[in-house]
Length: 165
Image 1 (cartoon, rainbow, N blue to C red):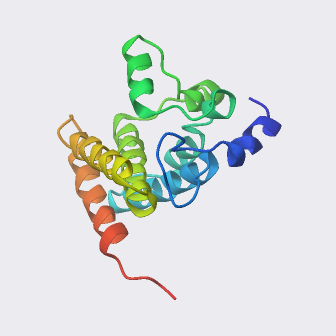
Image 2: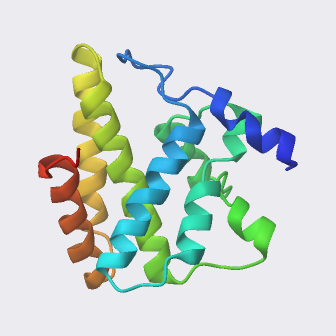
């Protein structure tokens, strides 16, 4: 993927099947996931350089394919195809299992936070509930305990934190 392709991430709209009060781009989502992943890594005392790079790249395939709803990604993944594996393709590096945990938790937490904050109408409420369940289910998977504790701390800061003026 070339830089001119990557820069189009700001033009790819997410949540196209859900009514929202504003649009979210793949670029905005990736930035948010990156910041959440960085915060979780910091809380868990995990080096964040590879995690932040992977977070920024985790949905870049959608620049070429358009936003892909999670349900479709899961079905494709079940068929043996990983749509969002650019980090490994581009860098030749693989994230450690706890780094993968950080990225997965961050992606799901960002989706839940964003749709809960910006969703509009009954369908958006159902999608927010589904995002919450997906996020909570992350903790029933085999996940690094340190990452789980750190994610809960960051989650509280996101939903209950005070704002800096």
